[in-house]
Image (tube, rainbow, N blue to C red; front, top):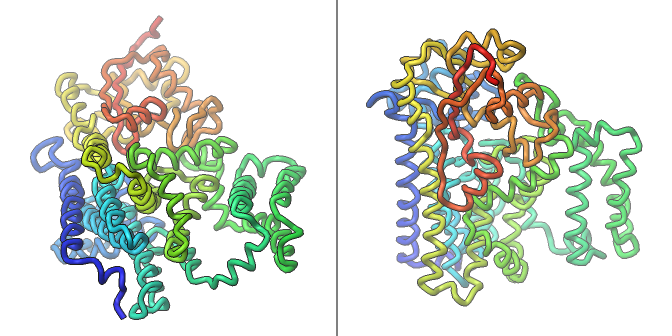
Length: 578
């Protein structure tokens, strides 16, 4: 028996999806093969994203990470004549050199670009299955993902993020088809669960099987809970785990456990089944026991110190503000304002769709993941949120088509052209990287001795004249700092001292800033403000944006992209400035 929904999709629908796939592939492939090329000559290559090739390094035993994507990109590169040199396996530097080499990196980027574009097709088909009476939902979601600047920017990079999202949604689609068709049995879906989890250790995928839990079991567990009480319960659980996994909470005296008691007020004790009483009584105990497991603590709390200074756990109470704001930033920039405004209507339409409740439950892992990132996650780089985007766009598309004006040409033009403009603004920053303009300064100033931060990427001709800055050099009379002529700083490094995706908006307590030290943060703040006695501003090369989403982020948090940002050149003076 074939799937009745997909059987009703005609050749014209598939041709439209093919066209959307091509629209998605072109910018992803183009950027994957051009970003970083030609900065210092026609055949020169400059590494932009230092997270690229991580899975490759793991496969060569040079990095602790998932090897799934790396094994594939190495195999493809080897088939194309760029095999792994002898003696590379197990050698950290050799593995790093091979995986960062353009011959492999172009393969890794191309692989990511193709799977990123293919995700668009998966989302379109999922739209057909989730809203069978409204095929426009599938087309709309696919088109929005195709032109999403955030998704394009991750698909053009040789990281595992875009491939991970592809395998996650491929698994979701398989479960959806299994629910609707006898031909594809549910027991076969674990074959696709493996890559969904293995690519980036995305354990949330297991929650997709909630769609096959018998209705009687749902009723038994939820008996006594109204819809509002269930929402309150989810929020209470998030707060409970958020407290227990917060390093600032863990540092409080033993009376801190009294703060967990309000959780019990959420449970309607007189209305629930008796066996469930024991479960709800023990939830805080189970939650605390989990935090004592090192692996769980590593993924929910982090460590207080690491090699760059503070670890991810140092965020403390600021985590409550940073994490949910990051979810908002990713959705705002990834979707664009028009689609984001349609998201609530999509959620309402989904909740009202009683006929397809089990189908929508396939996306439960995304909700659990969103709550994890909003309350628990210690590591909050924006790319880690990428799996939220396709599901959010499906709901936004469903919401858009609830409005009477949805089919009007002007509304359609605004709804689709806005994210296109946002994409041009966002992805364009990679092609107009300030470090390219910085090359002109080197030709003009021809500096002989320069200190730099990470991510400056100076021209190879000047590499020998550069040394990595240690903020201690600028202390006291700055004798060590004054041995150089200039200091060049990248926003992608000095943003550790300012509001960012890792620090959140509140940065007055320097000890709560991530991947730095209070004295380092103080130095960068003084240097950028022109308040350091031995540093004076010389040049500033900035990322410029014209879309309100990116302009707002720039004003409050700095540049949205992780490895593209402002470059500041400071002249080092031999005598203190007055």
